[in-house]
Amino acid sequence: MHLEIITPDRKVFAGDVVSAQFPGTDGLFEVLNNHAPLISALKSGDITVVGAAGRESFRIEGGVVEVLRNNVIVLAEGAVA
Image (tube, rainbow, N blue to C red; front, side):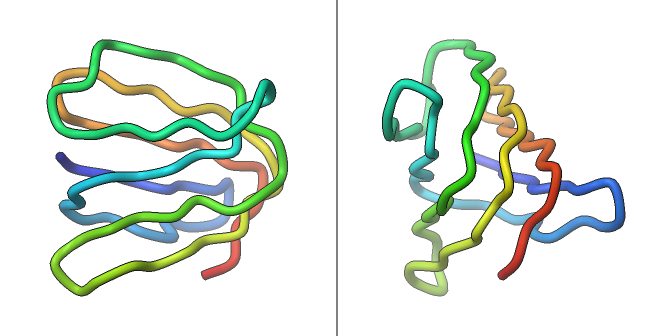
């Protein structure tokens, strides 16, 4: 699936991943290929992605995530790789 992490200032990450774990407002949740459509609020915390290059983490300051047709878009208030 394709993941993009975007802040008001820049695109922090864009690439294909196998899985992504998000800090939802009600707890952590994971998205895999062919996940059902979803929109969720995110709290401050770490997004952990697993891709061809291995595991990567990004610290975000809250935002929203949209999952639709194997495309995942995170709009974050701020993020650090």
